[in-house]
Image (cartoon, rainbow, N blue to C red; front, top):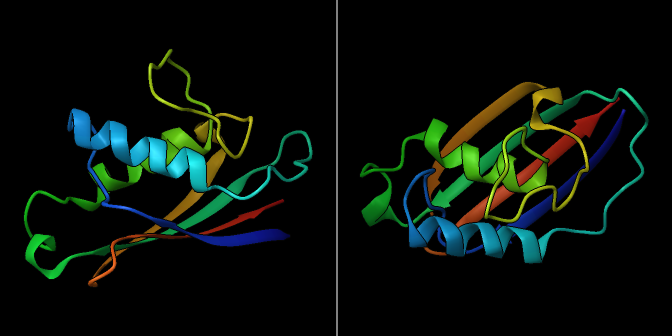
Length: 118
């Protein structure tokens, strides 16, 4: 199983949050590592740990809504988008078969990403 880990710095924004989501998705797209080789038919396991300022930890940052912009930016999505998409993998996020989410309080905001594929 291949694996990569990296950190995206910025203020995590939930899905459907207007301009803050646009800034977050652009931050994700510009900070991803180089695109790895992916075998045809690969499936992915993704772990996301959101680091959120303590003042925002419990307000309007539902984990499921925080995950969507990250997945839609890293992978391609089935519907057209005006936002960056497929920044790391040229495959649909429907190939993610396991998703683990966590949210922690931190002064420096962003998301820690670990992705495995086979």
